[in-house]
Length: 193
Image 1 (cartoon, one colour):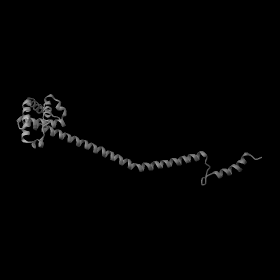
Image 2 (spheres, one colour; image 1 turned 90 degrees about the vertical axis):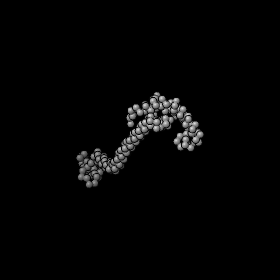
Image 3 (cartoon, one colour; image 1 turned 30 degrees about the vertical axis):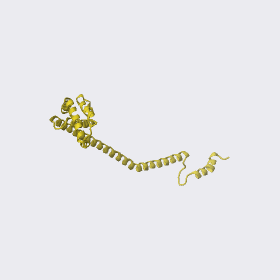
Image 4 (cartoon, one colour; image 1 turned 135 degrees about the horizontal axis):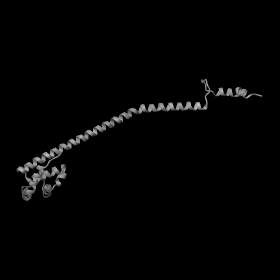
């Protein structure tokens, strides 16, 4: 009878050599082959990942630079806007000072001064118009709403202009004291820009 060893040498050994990969000097088990495939797959995926990183890195850097530039530009625009607002407020404050001085010195009609002050304060310091001493500016504004302004007033017939002048003179006489209080209040105002 044949021994197990003989069968092994005669049958299994030749099959084993047929299954052995070409060029390899040793027999590899199924586990070894799966590890090799796994390592090959890992290597391929690693290389693909590195290629993706190399390809996408310039895109990411450009987006980051663009975002940083956008943030800087936005901050500059905000600062320019703040500067413009501060300049506008400073201009309004100076205009209010000039108008109130002219009203106090009689160089500006009270009605015209009230209308100009109301227009300036309405756009820049609307909260200031809520003060009781300055309510007269709103009163003058409402009472003269029907009177044409600037060039439209100049184009009126002389007779109509005289009617409006008379109404304004009567209103100024009636509201002179509250108007002077408003002028004093604005001159004493501590302005913050």
